[in-house]
Every structure is written in structure tokens, then in C-alpha cells.
Length: 123
Image (cartoon, rainbow, N blue to C red; front, side):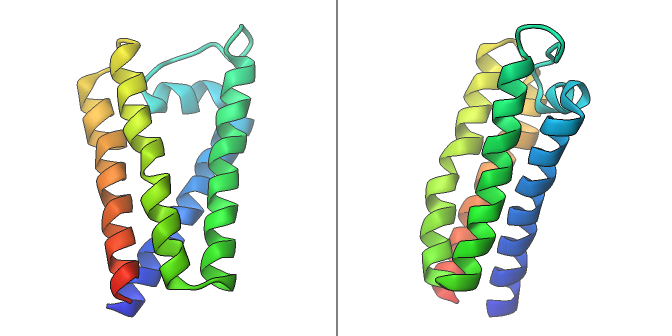
């Protein structure tokens, strides 16, 4: 169980780093994949950069918490971080994005993050 908990947590943290990188260096495709397309050359450019920094930071903090504070602290971190994909679900729905993306990507991610938290609490 411990290996699964750590593996899932590391994978989620690395995925956040990947998302951050993508929003910083490929903002147009990243926004389309997010579910609310935006023109990075237009007004949305700053917001896409902010999202990239936010996601990348969550990944770095998650890895640091796991490495230096342990599974229990990472579990609390994941529990708190689950708010982000739940919020992303609402954002996509509010701005006319596809329900399949809102629930199939963002809501599902929130559930996986909560599962990770549960596994880490048990580790």
C-alpha cells in the first residue's frame, strides 16, 4: 500500500509540474486541453501564465512536502489541493466548456487526488 501511495503522489506532483510547463511554454494548446480555449496573445496571456506558475508550484511543493515532511503531511497537502481541480470543474462549466472535459478531466482528477490523500493517510 505504501508504494502505491507514494507512487501516485509523485505521479500527481510530476503531472502538476508538466501542466505548469505546458501552460508556460505552450499556452494555447494547454488552454484548449483545459477546456476553455484562450488566445495567449490576447488578454488571456497573463492568466495562462498564472495558471502555469500555480500548477508548477503545486507540483514542486508537493514533491518537497513528500520528501521532507513525509506521507502524512503530503496527505493533508493533497486533501487541500483537491480544491483546485474541483474549482477547475466549475470554471470549465461556467465558461461554456464541455461537460465531458469538466467531469472527465477536472472532476476525475479531484477524485484521484482525494484517493491519493486517503492512501497517504494509510501509509
